Image 1 (cartoon, one colour):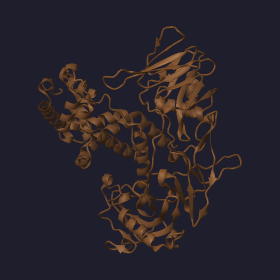
Image 2 (cartoon, rainbow over the protein chains, first blue to last red; image 1 turned 45 degrees about the vertical axis):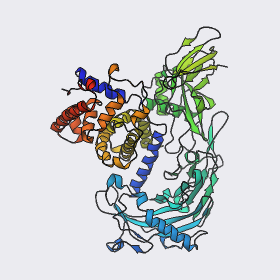
Image 3 (cartoon, rainbow over the protein chains, first blue to last red; image 1 turned 30 degrees about the vertical axis):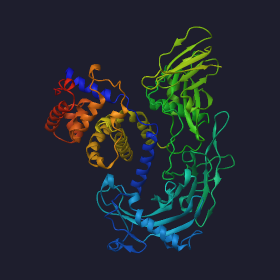
Image 4 (cartoon, rainbow over the protein chains, first blue to last red; image 1 turned 135 degrees about the vertical axis):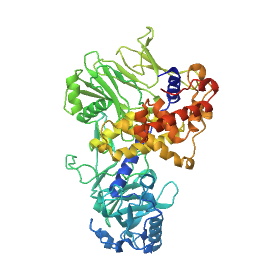
Length: 457
Length: 171
């Protein structure tokens, strides 16, 4: 490379030196991925403008079902049933539901921006399966027979019946198509303000709901399950679990036994919530937290180690929902007594909780833990984390010291009136005798750093 | 959590900050567009996660490069981010610090056609060879050569003289 090319390369790197993802970026990607996977599985990919839309007897072109028999999936028997629910006779509302579906049904599900192909078509008029009042306002379930069209759409050919939830969207107060489910197991929806209203069809297999994780004083996590009550083929449940209900709740296909155990996995309800609140946890993707004592070289392995250690201690979600997300930071340090400590946080019950795992310092034991095998370990619960503080601080048992961390901070500590001892990174293991730690963080350009002195008591 | 979900989540969490930097340059400094582009690429990768052979990061970079050219066709429909002049402080390093000032550089990148900009980013930020760049973009080596040459020439025109005179073609 000549020096001139080096200038361009250096300049490009400088231009991105402070570019970082926003705190909720990972969550947005995961949510979007689940939605996209669902749509792909359900075979929904087309442009709204060119498909044959046949709803409520409104034909846009030759009825598609005349073109050939459907044979892949038997017709949904609910198509032949009368509309159920306490608004089943409200013709004005039913008309509004169907007109909303006609206007938005195809467009709300299309993947035209990515596939740009006509991948499915509506084969019969839509049918309102259920219409009723809910805690989030009037809502209805619309059944729509569809067929995948031929062509390179990367979807399975054949027919299926979608079920769509039409209801009031909190942001504009108007009736819209809120969700569309492509198979029965997906017919569980959370909608309305804070996604606090749960609606499940009997066909979904849902039998119980757990609104949140209960975190005990020792940091253990448990769940209570409430039975869903079905009427007219639909269960409605009002969830009161705080600001992060869409993160906390799970729907189960069975009720727990007398010991509180369930044997089946919770339902995969990836489409259950539009509202998605970022977790209140430290966002420290660049925290330099490897302070020694850890023999697992990669971050993924270290996360697995912590996850398994906490799971063995009963300090993870007992229902292990899909996409359980751990923190994007951890601190590992070699302890004076030869053990290793790993510190991280876990989200539960609308809050983030701090945990320290004290584990053997040898490589073999740590690799066992990564594989899910049990080893001698001690887990210490550090309580709910204070996001506003901008740092985490935790005293370790057996006089092993203090763990302090704050991404981007310059730190130092002292013992009594002795001189301050500077620390190297933005995480550290302090001696147990330390009495004060000082964190200095850069402020706005032209301003002095923000200095915080914390007594260690 | 399924293993697919878990490994994908880990990949997104760990590698997004790095991938965003490439995306930022491909989008010529438009931070919002860069996140949108990366999110789009990652979501697509999730659907194919089990079928991606080899390490996922090179796949993501290649997908980013290809998506950048296509994505840009619709750029005019989205609201642009705040102009860089508004967000960069007065102490922004410049030529005296041995680099081209960011605002100047991304403004010049923005003036390049999408494919030319992508070639420049792959060659000088990702350190791709001409062959690797050609493979990533599905074009010939000759195209990469010509796009590089014209891209550098255009950059020289667009940035201030004291920096532009330092820009030469990579051998």
